[in-house]
Length: 239
Image (cartoon, rainbow, N blue to C red; front, side):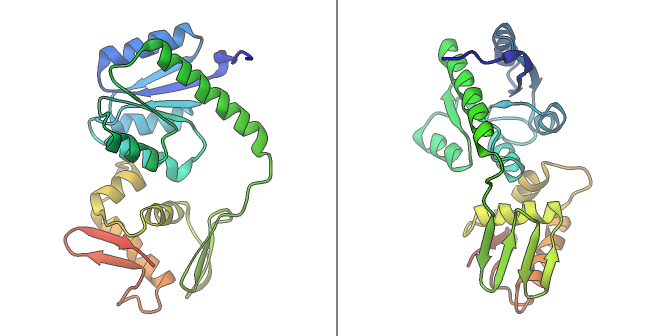
């Protein structure tokens, strides 16, 4: 098996237990990786954007914003970066929820260090192989509902309002609704996953985006079929 060139590989550890985070950093650094630690949810998302890691080690129970919301937020932007959940939550239901939301691997605490390091190397190796083989044959991401279609690849929609160019945030929120089709999302969830606790966002911001989506995609925005409200809870997308 060929060696990984760890020297140029960056790993982000999002873990609030300092002794675990520092232990992981030490052992990964000894393997040649460049490691950054974030000890809560918001700083984890900030580090993901600024540090641009090749792999993320993610705890679930975090201050500020939980690991599953971080996972979903990242997957709205990047479906390729490998993510390994490292958590004390180890029931089959917890693992299933992690995989349903796009995690690549799941290891329960307490864990064996050698097994952890092997999983890290496997995920990075698989990611390298994948990146070499996707080349330029990416398929067009087209989602159709009712008389509407959304082209995620080109950021366009054909809908009641005609052809429109969608903003990055509109695309991100539409993807969030679609991946949670049929499930009610609270305003808090939408803010956490869609914005990652971004500054100057409020529940009213969510409402404004939904109003915009209804204008785009609903025949009668006042009686929406696809983007429906759940009083005092949030919104659900279905078709």
